[in-house]
Image (cartoon, rainbow, N blue to C red; front, top):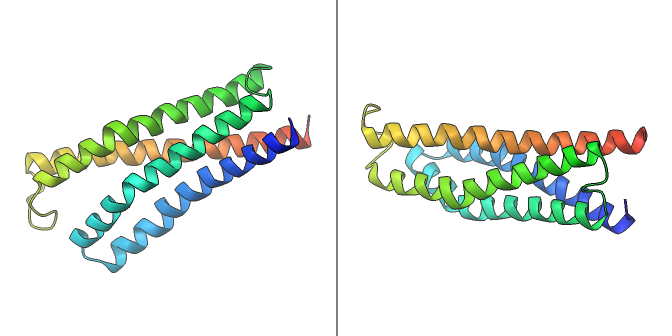
Length: 158
């Protein structure tokens, strides 16, 4: 792999996995632990557009660096890694431009997550979409971790 492209690729993977993990496993839980549910939801909802665009940027840069290094399509291992990045790009794109806006629109119809009954159709729909969102977010983090582990393993054991 070309040294500059290699460095950019590693940096993009680190930002991808690190950024998503910090937001998912540190920032969001702290916000929900220290704020009311309503306030926390508003704060996290306000952060989501920037978060999803950050994730999208990191994945795009990883793909571009991989392609620039000539490692994207040169063998089965490389194709598998490229497939993981393209799959992640598709998931993050759907999340950014499809799922997140739908969640925000549904959330706007719920008067209060604290006082609205769980049986309310809008609240149930928001919960369903939130479950999908969390699953997709975790899948993209895991894909990034696999890429980091594969990259390291390929460098140690060619």
